[in-house]
Length: 141
Image (cartoon, rainbow, N blue to C red; front, side, top):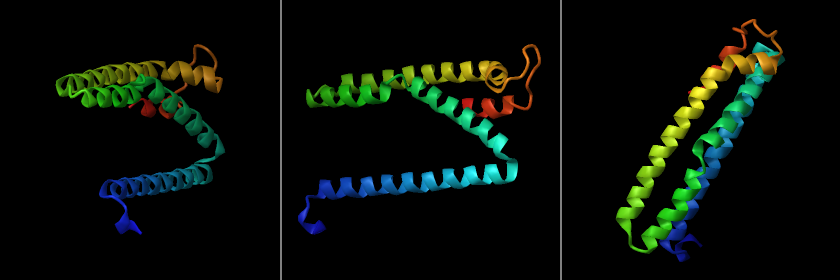
């Protein structure tokens, strides 16, 4: 059956199966890690980890600035018009803006980790929360 398909379709199918397998393995490893954290470190630490991870995922979406989808759209359009230098310039700008946006969001997360620990985890205002800050800070990197 595969021999009757064009070579580019076979390549797409192989790459899609690799992506699917990688996502499945990643999901299983995340699940096992959550079980490990809950079992050996306690449910409270798992809650801190989950909130920290959610904040990091939101920050990663914001940090992309929508550039990943924009690059695919505009570069494919420019390549179809045979404007390769403009496509290369678009990719370079997207990398530059993505780096700047990611660094900014990372700095905001590092700078705001203590405040988030106080606000989210209920530590009294004016008292530092050293036990919660390490939960938030590593996700900024």
